[in-house]
Length: 77
Image (cartoon, rainbow, N blue to C red; front, top):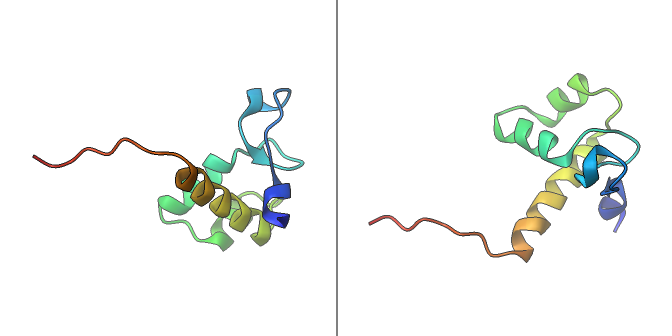
């Protein structure tokens, strides 16, 4: 529950893109950095306004988002 409170989507902030609360940093940016090989510590160093728990919340948010929807996947021929 605390993770869900760290990610907010407000139409007045970044057009409603889910962001880390109190920042204009999209959760997708954080997740993308991790996907590119950055560590949690790297992300916090690059964005000192974030905490380790913020980064974990962004990852949990992303996991929840893909769990709740069906994504079209290409099946190899």
